[in-house]
Image (cartoon, rainbow, N blue to C red):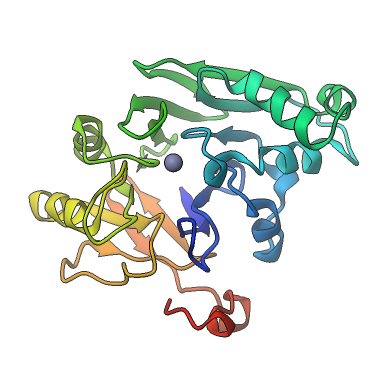
Length: 264
Ligand SMILES: [Zn+2]
């Protein structure tokens, strides 16, 4: 399984908002600016076959409109686009389109062939495109799902989405080969985990590779060797045994944060 980070930041940072792409075709979250970030990283938004949404906050969801435009504006898909997320996904897309491009969705919809799989507060499971998806209820300001995504080779990627440290995070830690975690702050607060929570998990499970994402600018490093801090565009190979770290993107492909004077 190849995991590539489209973005690794939270709002109010120069990093792109957190989202990730599996094997070039399974997109986890579609935050503000993510389609531009994909194109800038040489990734093709029209190659996405499955989009998994953790929750409907704008920094996880607002580029869904642009994903659908990328998919249907200039071509017609030859297979369904699978959209997996919390209950209400379909209605939210209708609303967002009506607000942003009134009348357009009815023309695009037939070309995109969206097929929604919506999970309620208890989560659930489905199998799509050669992957198994298990949705787990997280604890955030709005209904949020974390996911365990398993490929045919047995690599198991856990992805928390936004959440405080709750029992579902520990379930993901127990069952994942690699776990990607909300690490918004140094100390967890207001619906998010902090580095303190992630380091607790890292200490409990020294054999598990953890990847910190949704990073605030103050979260840059840890003394725990099993926590990785990715940059936008960086990719990783995930095997059933864990993580193989790829080289960071070449310097000229990395986002230039220097003009904003913010530390990476
Ligand atoms: Zn959120």
